Length: 210
Ligand SMILES: C[S@@+](CC[C@H](N)C(=O)[O-])C[C@H]1O[C@@H](n2cnc3c(N)ncnc32)[C@H](O)[C@@H]1O
Image (cartoon, rainbow, N blue to C red; front, side, top):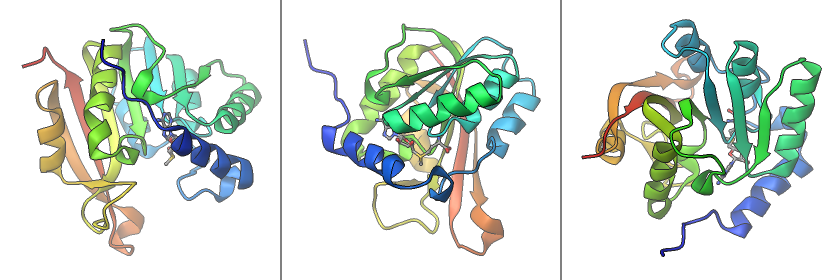
């Protein structure tokens, strides 16, 4: 049997150090509130309440929102400190979510469990060699027809290599098209265009594999 690719101990330790040594509010990705991309998706009514997974949840803003909206919420992050911050926040908000320390490349969930996997700032951390393991795990835990919402850096204004990596819509199509039906891809300017950087947001649906 081939060994599953896992995130290296060094990378996991680096993320943990980041959360241990910095106040969470100082982290550049921390919004302190749910992502507008997630709110838009949920308010569109596209996914009915059921089991959902927030990958690389960080301090849990998006997972908590999903729990508040009536979804059966599950969330993973590789940093134990991030997970304890998320658990505390959820308790303060009076919400219930299953927050787990775990590696996205080796998820501790059964096949076909989720109707939605939400990703803000997760996929773009993985190297080219790790991407097919990442896509296989997301594919495995989603039910057929389940949705994957990807929010990553775009290549526009982010072309220094990585991690984190930037992607073009064509890159995303090439990487995901054999397993997912791509419903849409958008490039959205960060900070109203002043930064010259873009985020790439995509919605795709688990399909039967080519
Ligand atoms: C850019 S932050 C995004 C956090 C959160 N999604 C948000 O929008 O605020 C990336 C997160 O990915 C987590 N992470 C990195 N590699 C991971 C892995 N292999 N498995 C699970 N989480 C991981 C980090 O600990 C960090 O919390």
